[in-house]
Amino acid sequence: MKVLGIETSCDETGVAIYDSGKGIIGDALYSQVELHAEYGGVVPELASRDHVRKTIPLVKEVLQQANCTKDDIDAIAYTKGPGLIGALFVGVGVGRSLAYAWGIPAIGVHHMEGHLLAPMLEDEKPDFPFVALLVSGGHTLLVDVKGLGQYDILGESIDDAAGEAFDKTAKIMGLGYPGGPALAKLAEKGRAGIYKLPRPMTDRPGLDFSFSGLKTAVANLYKDSDQSDQSLADIAYAFQEAVVDTIFIKCRRALEQTGHKRLVVAGGVSANVALRAKLTDLLESKGGKAYYPRPKFCTDNGAMIAYAGYCRYQAVQQKQGQFEEPVVRAKPRWPIAELD
Ligand code: KG4
Ligand code: ZN
Image 1 (cartoon, protein in one colour):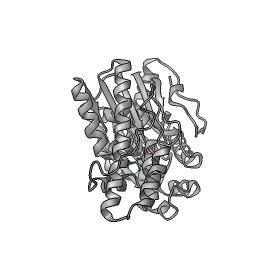
Image 2 (spheres, protein in one colour):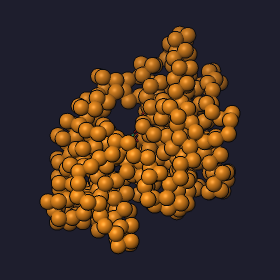
Image 3 (spheres, protein in one colour):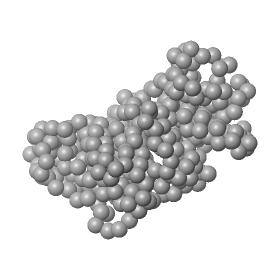
């Protein structure tokens, strides 16, 4: 079967087609980064209007890429939440309307479940159960995943999300928006041991995170430094090292607490090379394995929504359940633990 997936929760319009036999057969993404760059962050109203312009053209593009017509599509999955309400409504409206017109089911997908399942699109897929580390611009979650929809939150950020910490720190250092990838690139030229930043909340038990203090610490380092290229790279290195170490310590704890030998890492920050290297080593040292999406499926995309929609479709069929009633509903706030 083929599922068309639509992602419009934030500043990326993503559309893709998942084929249960072949995997992803069409995938298109339009990033609004340039649109928001001059404001230093996402402007929700501009985001919604741009999704309106791009969603239908991208649907046409992926159908063409996949050599399909509308008659080949068996279901439509769209991001129902969490996210920016106006942006969500574009995907919800387009997804529901197309499904109604084409006479096929529409499935509202949880954005973070999309991220969580994205590593299943790779050749080496994780089996359940596993610990999932979801690190994006809006969320930092450690989840005990026993199966599809069986999500127990082990820990989360009490303030800034990991990606948000990268973006805000990059902004302080004048690296533009979105700063995460730019900061990570700058850190490659940084030297170890020049600056030392704290590893927040690692000196006490528990699996929650707090990243907001790090940006203040970086602001002070930045102010007091000579702001030469090398100093900026050294500060970027120290910041990235502090975030990666903190996440590493919490993941190690989560694996010890649950006894799981598999770690799934997803969301925009899972593209970070230093984080991947450290977590891969951790799992190897424990005789387990870390799983990641390919870099382009770490950040927001339509493929993960198409795939999560496919999984949800199968679950409904297996239980001989009903698809959601055909109403246009988005959930800007939606804890992943509420899924079943
Ligand atoms: O998952 P995502 O595309 O959007 C949300 O659902 O929030 O994540 C975007 C976040 C941004 O904060 C971005 O700066 C961060 O992921 N990010 C990175 C890297 N690539 C993207 N952070 C650190 N290192 C990277 N290589
Ligand atoms: Zn995301």
